[in-house]
Amino acid sequence: MVLNGETITTGASNICPDCKKKLVLEVLHSIAGYYIGTRCNCGPYSRESDYYKTHQKAENCIKNECVW
Image 1: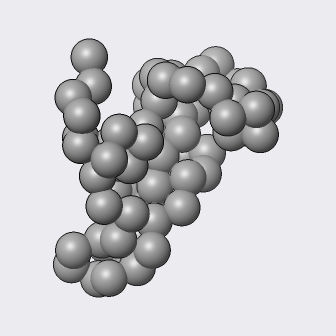
Image 2 (image 1 turned 180 degrees about the vertical axis):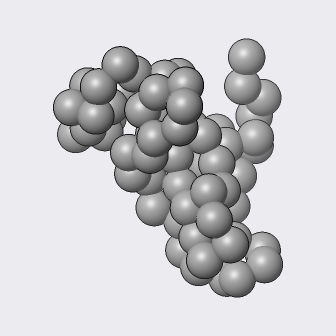
Image 3 (image 1 turned 135 degrees about the vertical axis):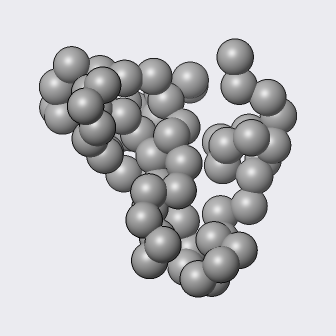
């Protein structure tokens, strides 16, 4: 369960408080799979979605503005 203000899509700031980079949704990858999230100069910043089995499924979700 995601709380309001916990992710960018639920109201958190889209600027990293440390490096001040604007955070943009993109497909990222971890050992658990592909996910939609953000990264900045500090490294991975947020995970905005569940995990997907393929990069293409996560990319399609960004293009179609899926609701998480």
